[in-house]
Image 1 (cartoon, helix red, strand yellow):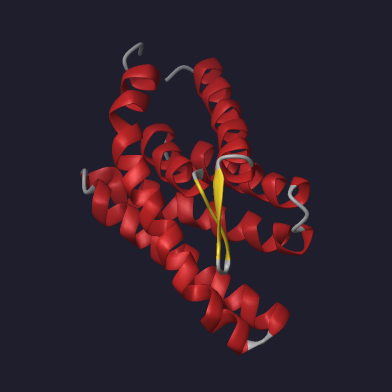
Image 2: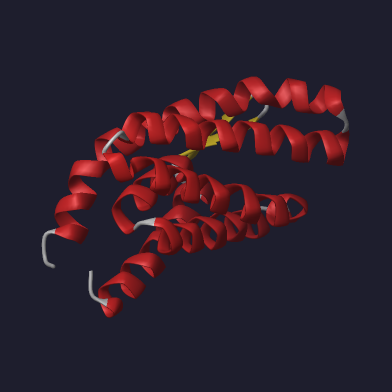
Length: 157
């Protein structure tokens, strides 16, 4: 992609990740399940390493701040950025599902560590099941979004 298209797509994905995390969600027993992870995985595969890391970090952390979970925003910034880096790097060989599963692992382990530090190990254990469900939904959503995103962002090189 040309630099201006990459910048525009990065900003668009950051906004989509914020909205998908903050507003497109369903409450669950350990928080809520949202569309943000699927958008992070999609951005990582379509945009590549650094643009996706920026979009994932900024978009996800902004959702935390706007959604009243500012205590998690610094953790989210790092976890989601690292998730995007792992997915983008691992997807270079075309193994998108494996890449997303590795990214999901980063997310689950990252939030378990953050929750254990902030609220103690029992809280981390309680939250892990919800996070596993969350990232699973994200992988499924990304598999649906990828063909659409590829046509939209990669067809006009």
